[in-house]
Image (cartoon, rainbow, N blue to C red):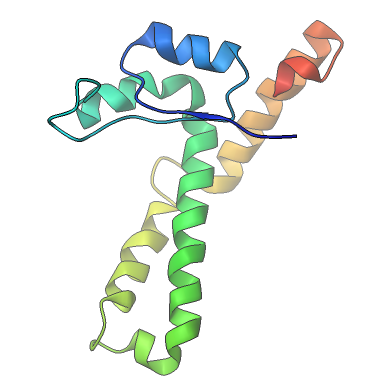
Length: 126
């Protein structure tokens, strides 16, 4: 199954339409010269319907990328000669902001299970 990401969303209606169309991911444009540009505060409000999923996915993904970079650099990655140690410290704390990842996984699971029970199909929980 292919997963779709819909980017450049700037209104609550566009986010709702993307989610209704089973988009696996939604994205926002922060480039100021783009006609689809949204402020970070507006993107935060627009992302509320998927915040738990996004928080777990993004924090985990960035953590894995930096962890891989640390592995590739060996002991040098933990020294002050590269920015990796500072990045790791900042990213590690982001896994706790807005609640631990496990809490968000439980909440996403509860919502999905509620949809499955209400619709009697797993299609609604995607």
